[in-house]
Length: 195
Ligand code: VGL
Ligand code: ZN
Image (cartoon, rainbow, N blue to C red):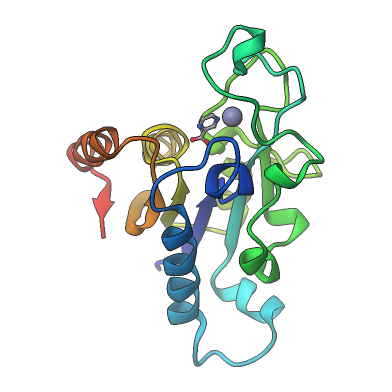
């Protein structure tokens, strides 16, 4: 049997309109909402019932204020997604679909970059990989930010773990357009389905 889940990667304010604002981010959020709507319509019921049939898992880049990926601490990025700040919050339009058990934080340790959401952990220290397994997931749909970094690394790790990976190409945002196209090409050649 096929069991679908949606993984929403880093749809956080710093990547949408903040310090690391990415191209197509606002549109990607709108398209993601449309997609969620299309998958959950007709099921009726409350949002928590929807989660039983179509789990939506959220990844959050979640850094300490002195994270080593920030320029002033030797990294390449402006400060972003600092835990506890507005820039690190999930876009408010998506919040109705967010639950604590299905929210996974990464990059929490100041010394590690962690672009992949696969190793992210929820409040109970369960990883995304563990929870997908508990949900009997076969097919993972992925959207989010940024194509070349977190989306890319998350998709590759999901594929390695044996999932069928579907990348929703209208629901992603990127740092650089050429980099985005190149990452899409590479992911397609790895066996990720671009939809
Ligand atoms: C990301 C840059 C810095 C990402 C995270 O999630 O794509 N990009 N930190
Ligand atoms: Zn980061």
